[in-house]
Image 1 (cartoon, rainbow, N blue to C red):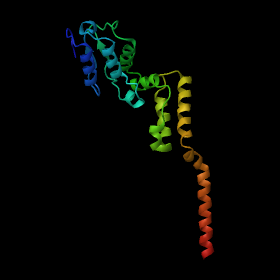
Image 2 (image 1 turned 180 degrees about the horizontal axis):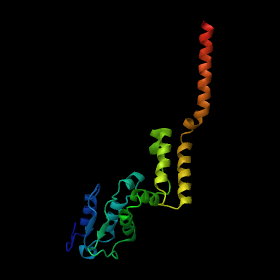
Image 3 (image 1 turned 135 degrees about the horizontal axis):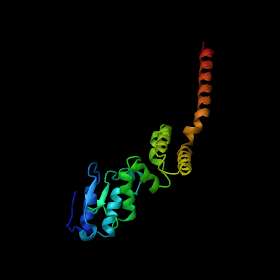
Image 4 (image 1 turned 90 degrees about the horizontal axis):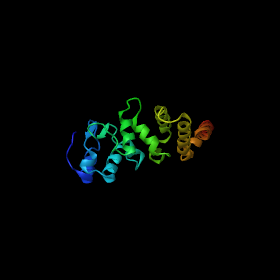
Length: 185
């Protein structure tokens, strides 16, 4: 979309950003930031569009398609640094922009939303961290993977501890039932 020579000010920038939520096809939005009257308020709306840090899910659902916001001549001097970074990640086909934004914006992952999956989620979590390799230093990524797994497993001790202990109890009950069945004969 080209919006050159249109003064839409911050209210227009906010409306544009809201209108582009869920966008999966528009990759470039051209306008002259200074003549459009976009200030920090308007840029904040574009920043939230590109990377909504209010939750991991919202970051995942942010716009990862938009590769340019600003001047027709690709002059990024008027574009805030965070937006420059987000559009650079969106452009880079070798990385997963959503993963990069999540890793950058969220230092600790809240595991509670995944409890409904119980231990079935652990392989999914490991696979996600493996997909994230190359987006963060190896040491930092491994540390976050282990700490996320620890937090998840620690929050569900009965499922984890019940593994061997639960199997032993099941064997004891089966043995008891068999003995009771034989005693009745």
